Image (cartoon, rainbow, N blue to C red; front, side, top):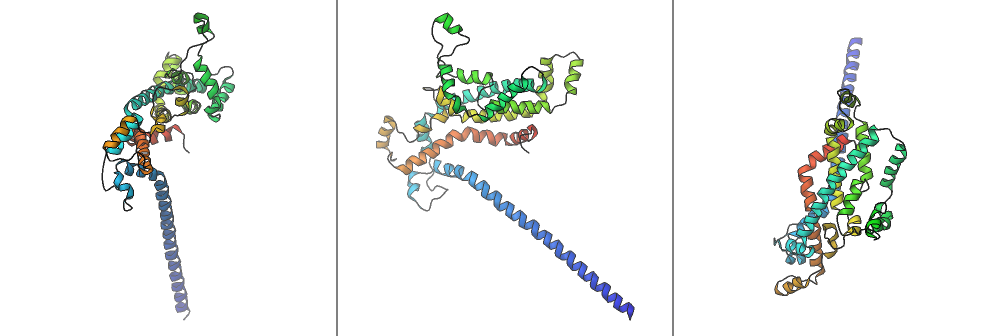
Length: 337
């Protein structure tokens, strides 16, 4: 009798234990699936917020003006056309501005990356007087917006002179470097260009994280500082170089602060947005012979969206081809986390 009661109690305990394990198992699964669902909804919503403007611009770029008044047309146009792209490109004089922007962005990226590479390596590896103060000034340039220095920078390049040499030779107050690319190059070379402080900081932190034993071994083999830098340190800093180069190109391509300050008659794409929606006399004459209405605000808004899209197109293409390398370089350079 006692044995039977004991068996019943053991069986009951086993069943309760199995039931609890079963409930915990499904409770854990339910929590996991709930978290996956919430995370997926959040990520989809976040991606939608980011991609919605791009999707809208893409839709409007290929949309005929007839589709503007069609309430059934949301994103996929019923009447596909390339006329909007042609009109927007004519408004902003796209190809000359594209050429100037590409030349400026590529050359500034090369100059800026090299200058910041040298400066960052110097801060990371060499001990010299006032190093801490000078690096503090570099950090200070990250904090201070460039708009505070626009007046002084403008006057500096409007009457450019080096220690009064120009005035002593020519008798003039200085050389006017405005409406040329020279101010961009001088700022980039001297470590004062767009986001130069951030790029110097990235290189300095990256070189500080590299082991000194490799440099010491190169010095033992008879290599000097420049040879060690070129053959040992630079190949090891490829990820940081790619990160800085990509950021430099994007920021220079989108720059309006220095471009509006230095360039008056030279067209670059960031400064052409104001011309979107402005029809030249030739385009007004063409409008009389075609079907588009220059006074229609919806049509003008559609042209502005198309213009912004073709301005962004090089950056979209760059990211599409370099996104994997771009993300890897950012992670290895230690910018995230």
